[in-house]
Image (cartoon, rainbow, N blue to C red; front, side):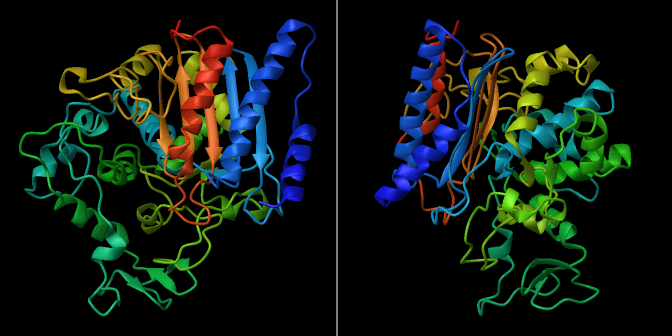
Amino acid sequence: MAYKTILFIFFINFLRMPILGQGDSAIVLLNLEFKVDSIVENGILNEAFPGCIVYAARGENVLLKKSYGFHTYDSLRPVFISDIYDLASVTKILASTLAIMKLYDEDLIVLDAPLKQYVKGLGLRKIRNLTIRKCLSHEAGLQSWIPYYKEWRKENGAFKRNTISNNYSDKFPYQIAPDLYLHRDIYQKIKRMIKKATVQKSPEYLYSGLFFYLVPEIVENITNMSIDDYLRKNFYLPLNLSTTLYDPVNKFDLNRIVPTEIDTFFRNEPIHGKVHDEGAILMKGVSGNAGLFSSINDLEILSKMLLNNGSYGGKEYLKPGTINLFTSYQNPQNENRRGLGFDKPLLEYDERLSSVAKSASIYSYGHTGYTGTLFWVDPKSEVVFIFLSNRVYPNRTHKALYQLNIRPTIHQLIYDYLGLSNGF
C-alpha cells in the first residue's frame, strides 16, 4: 500500500476519533484505541480486509465505536459508521434463531418436535425425524452444506433443466446476475436436495447450514407470514432498526453498502448490495442461513436487547428464560460447544481456533460470519463486541483475518482494559 494512502487512512481515522472524557480513564481508553488502531491498520496493510468497523461496550458504556479503512482497496470510499455490511452467518442468530425464539415464547413451536411437523414434503427421508433442538445445536448429524450451483451444472457447464437459465422468462423470473435467472420453484428444488442430504447414523457435533434454509418455510407454515415480515413485525420495526434487512439494494444507495466479493466462478460479477452466499442468493436473497445485512447502530440495539434479558425501551421482545435456554451450552458432554442457534466459546480454549477472547465467559454467545463479521455478547461481564468487515474482498482467498487472529486479539484487549482478564 502506498505511503500517501497509509497517511490518508490515519488522517481519516483521526477525524473519526470520538471525543473522550477527562482524566486518567480517558488516557487509558485512548491507549486502548491506539492498540486497536494498530491491529486494524496492520490487518489492512496485510489485506485482511480493506476496511472494518469495531464496536465494544460494557453495559451502557461504549468503549469503542469506530470505522477504519475503505470499502475496497482502491481507497476511494472510506468506511463510515452508518455503512451497511453483509452479515453472512450472523443471519443464523439475528434472523432464524430470533424468529424461532419468538415462536417458542408464543408456544407455537416445540423444540423436540421432528422437522416433518413444520416442513412439508420431506417424505420418508431420515431428515424428517430430526428435531428442531438437534438442528439448532448442530447435533443432528446433518450434512454440512450443499454447493447447489455446482450440483445443478451439467458436464458441459450448462445448468440442468428448471434450475437456472441464462434468459428471463415467466418460468425464470428472478435475476441473480446479468445472465442468470432462477426458476420460479427454485426453493422446492433446494428442499429436494436437502431432504436427500446425508444424516449420520450416530449423530455427533457437525456444523450444518442446511436446516437454516428451511427456517423461512417453518416460520411461514406456522404464522402465514414470510420470515422477513415476521422479523420486521416482532423485532426490527419496533426496535427502529432501519438497516437490518434482506436485499438492501432495494432500499439504500450502493455507496452506503459495503461490497463483498468479485465473483469469478458463479455470478461472474462484483457482489454489491446482494447477498454474498451462493446458497442464500438461490433463496432469492431471503434465507435463514445468510442474507441479512445491517449496520453497527442497529446491531448495537440488538445487543442491548439481548444483554437486557430480552427487553429494550420498556418493551419485552423475548422472555429471559428463552434467552437463557437458547444461549446455553446444549451438549458439552458430547464435545459440542453450541447453544441453540448461537455459538459459544470453545470448551477448551485454543487461540488458533477461537474467534473470541480467552476471557470471554462461558455464558457468552454470538456468531461469526464468512464475510468477516462477528457479533458477541457476554452477559456475565456485560461486554459486547461487534466486528464488521468484508474480508472476502476482492475474493475469499484473503484469510489474514484468521491468520493474524485479529478479532480475538481485539476482543481480549477489551477485557484487559476492563480488568476482566479472567472473564469476571
